[in-house]
Length: 139
Image 1 (cartoon, one colour):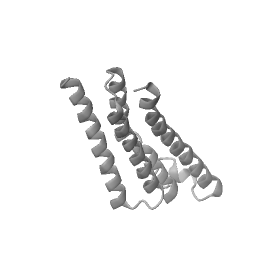
Image 2 (cartoon, rainbow, N blue to C red):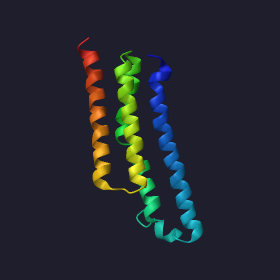
Image 3 (cartoon, rainbow, N blue to C red):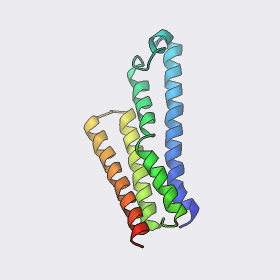
């Protein structure tokens, strides 16, 4: 596998994270400028932001949970030259599920559906780690 094929899903995941960060900044700035939120209301915490900025911020924060393990396994698979077509397909599945999770998070935020997509992403990530481990320890 080429480095581009292995790292493209990583770049897409990073872009998702950056887009969410910019969206948080923009929506929070709009709340302050419009007067919906007062500085004194959020100075000591984030619990007083309106619903939409909170949903986006929560989605952004979730990009530093499961994706951390994704980044690690991708880097290890590249370093050990065990990334193959199956691994790249799993990478894309994980990233697409993270995009779906973020979409649900910032729109309806319907928790049962969000959890299903989260669980599917977790399952894909576990499979990635098992696949990587099998290639390393059973080679």
